[in-house]
Amino acid sequence: MSKLYLYLARRDKHGIKVVKVITTDQQSGAVRVADIKRLGLPDKMTQEIQVAVDSNKMDYELWAETASDFMSLRSSLIARGYRNIAMNEPVMHPEFVFKAMDKSVIHRCKTMMKPGKSRS
Figure 1 (tube, one colour):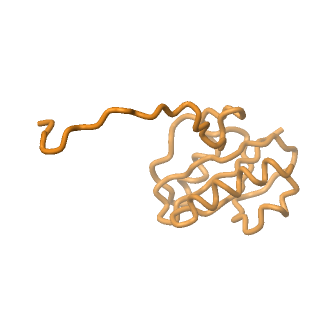
Figure 2 (cartoon, rainbow, N blue to C red):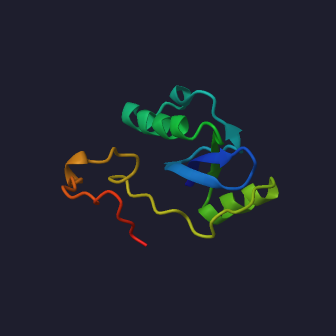
Figure 3 (cartoon, rainbow, N blue to C red):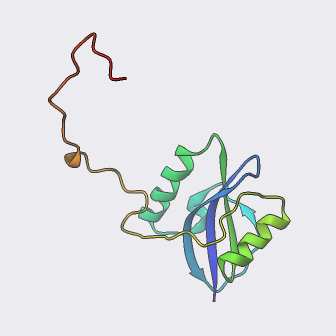
């Protein structure tokens, strides 16, 4: 079994952001993903990936690549000219990945600074 890494690669090859890691039995090299829906992923996962792509589309492109572990993915990326890649696999907690922030945890501050006073 190998892992399919879906990652956002910087256009200037100065790093990546791993979006999803999926266990698979198929092998593929590095492929630029133009249409996420063609991957056949569940709708919720597709939407989460689309949010990540849309919020980073200025500097990053979505790629898919299979590898046995993160270190082999890292060595493949370095061989293709990428730099600033983490040594360890990023921790993916499904319950925390790409969720919107709960606004109820933000407490409104009811005090103001007096005009003309500086905080130096």
